[in-house]
Length: 457
Ligand code: GTP
Ligand code: NA
Ligand code: MG
Image 1 (cartoon, rainbow, N blue to C red):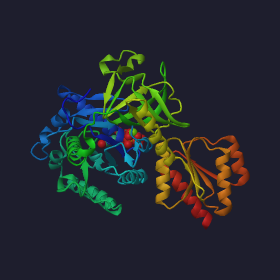
Image 2: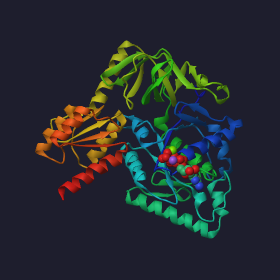
Image 3: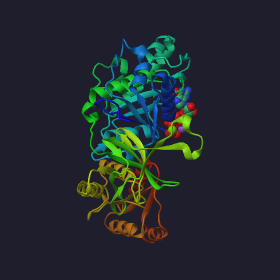
Image 4: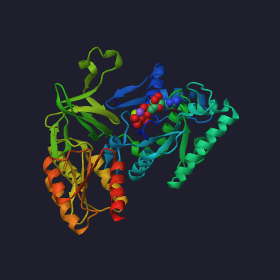
């Protein structure tokens, strides 16, 4: 429901990081912390997201009042629940991301790993501000846990040896960030948060440091992102995260609404494989409050409207062809719908393109992953001849074969999370065209680069 009288919406926060560094555990901990503070409001579950309201953040951060005074003007924080690079890629929005802020989770004992770098690259590319959660501090040898305590309190109670290890580990992260061209520092030592990226030591297991994590997130977003967060009354703007089948509703889309209000019966415009789709919202679905779940069918409740920021499932006729990562806009009338169709068409054409030039062929499963791949290739100076959604077809391979005659290193197909049709397979074998396939973006590019290197030797 509309946060009464608030002028700002909830910042949308995503969690990124290397596999097993603790993204899911951290979000679970934040959720449980919020549930435990439920006399102050608890949390609101959304589709693929949850809101931690301002009252909860204030309560959790209460012990820090003297150090980090948080007077909240945002109504809370919307955390996107299903983290992962592919999902992050789909949170796209022209020229950036729907995510207002990110938490880059780094296992303090392991430090930076390949997906940490990939996350950094994505955050830079989409210009998403972030902080680093240096996770698993409880694994520092000799650590004495103080469950749910602020970091500044628990660190004071640790042995000097433990404090020294923590300092060393933080110093190492600072070093890696410096190499990446991003100055970072332990949050307690930062004077100007616009100049340095905050490192907040936490334990997703014991909850230590969570008070600061929430306080810093809330403080930074409401201080520096105020314009972006200004609440707009108009029709909804959002992005499609996933396209699904749902019993009784057919094809539905899970979307994040970052502006305005979406109502049942609204006209919506969304990107499809064969062009923009215009339809009317039949139902807006949200997860049922926990106590109401008696059966599987009762897992969702219908609502009449949702206000940004929100994660919502949208049921409407004709959604079968929708592409994940595509914009979704509500229109006030047919005339506006026509204009929005053109805008959606233009935006998608910029991402799915064919040029006359020599370059690689890129096929991906969603608009978000396609964009991320093309951006990553551009950064590395690899030209792209064709970028599109869908399986690798024979014509894609023929395209690569033409290029191959002119530049053998560029006459390839890069396939991300898509099938290769049998005719394409046959044609590739005949023409000697390499098809690289992967379901991790950086791996796909790495495989291709390694192949180029070995071919050139
Ligand atoms: P993927 O989604 O697979 O990329 O992993 P993830 O980043 O979500 O990590 P996940 O939360 O699944 O945690 C991986 C393992 O680390 C699990 O066994 C967690 O229990 C453990 N873990 C996460 N955070 C902490 C922490 O703060 N301390 C300790 N000791 N273990 C942790
Ligand atoms: Na894991
Ligand atoms: Mg996980």
